[in-house]
View 1 (cartoon, rainbow, N blue to C red):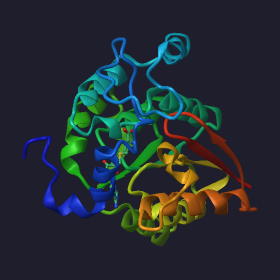
View 2 (spheres, rainbow, N blue to C red):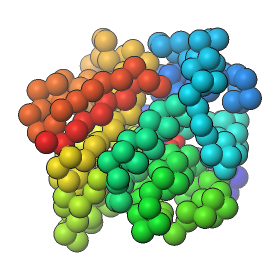
View 3 (cartoon, helix red, strand yellow):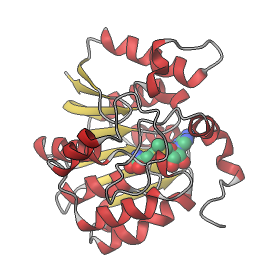
Length: 260
Ligand SMILES: C[S@@+](CC[C@H](N)C(=O)[O-])C[C@H]1O[C@@H](n2cnc3c(N)ncnc32)[C@H](O)[C@@H]1O
């Protein structure tokens, strides 16, 4: 199947994302112009295409050459805006290293940029449980996981992420993970969060992407289920005594929840 086709079986899971892209909702996931592929939209709520953004990358991004190769492979893909922001991915890798994580979960792999990013900093016996429903996207990045020599750290599960999380819980892996990155269909973000919270150890971190949803969270429409879902989770997290949180205006907004 051509890479650019969305297979029927994932149409439901990705439908809202599709709408999001068509309407610029994911405009915050944009890449800089200088050697970072095309910048297709100017709707970013936090200015991700101007000279200051370029300066930030020029003075902070330390990207592994194979990660860069994967980003450039992905950026011109028609769905390339789904890829995680590279500065944000670098923060994830720094956190994974800081807490000496061994077991991490990625919910929403796409072409595998952040999966590779985390695998690169995990110890040799570390493991990324990588969840997606679309194998065609993942196929783009898989050869680069191998080229980077980290393929053995990645356990790819092609099925709805809820199912994978339930299987991990059923197999006794509660409180054994160190880090989770939630970046898939937004309607399920609360369920992903609750299941990840059970899977993560105390002191572990859950990172939730797109918490600003290009600003739509400011005025969620009743018929916009994705925005409603993100907004409800944001409100819940503010009062959730099980975690400490930081909401960062990076990419399309990322919340870090530190399990107490
Ligand atoms: C925003 S992209 C993920 C970007 C990725 N984290 C990266 O590093 O570039 C969202 C992904 O979630 C996947 N997805 C959508 N619904 C899903 C579901 N129910 N279960 C698992 N993955 C899902 C899509 O196929 C897509 O690849």
